[in-house]
Image 1 (cartoon, rainbow, N blue to C red):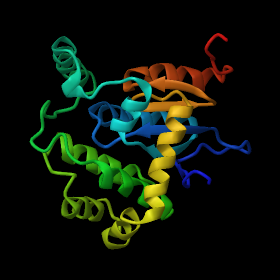
Image 2: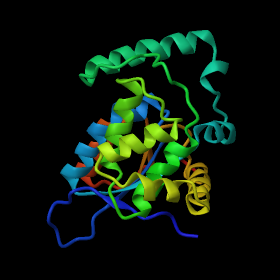
Image 3: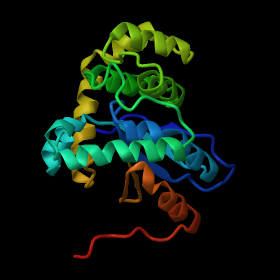
Length: 223
């Protein structure tokens, strides 16, 4: 079974085939929210294609040895909140550290992103709208009515997309994305995979930008 269709950023004119980045994330991830806009800017500047691959983080953690937030040591939970404040300032964002409707059941929201790309549209406008809705406006992305409203606000046909998002095809792609993530050594969100090299976390975007600029060979773990 092949992966779902890719959505392209605006590409620089070139006769060469554009490079591809597999973009693993979940709408429940604050780090994906913080990194989304700068990642899209980097992708657009380098003319790379973005393959949006939402994944269910609970299963990713379970498969790769990670822990859900509530099960982490209190020191790690406190440090996470400090880091969020640092990156909120660094990125020039204004958002709630503990939004009213977070965490939420992310399954349908992530599958909605898959539905957008499967319909031939770029997921970027919807993701920007949805991320800001969670973290800045404290809206509930676990609510199908809210998802439909956000889709319409992003210029999309919410009715047809909801039908796709609720169907078996997006369910299968969501599961396949999980398999792909684990097989590629992805263990968190966001993760950007360029030529097999994983860049984990929005704080690795500068390194991803450098790799795209230099066009160096991918770094691999020592055998």
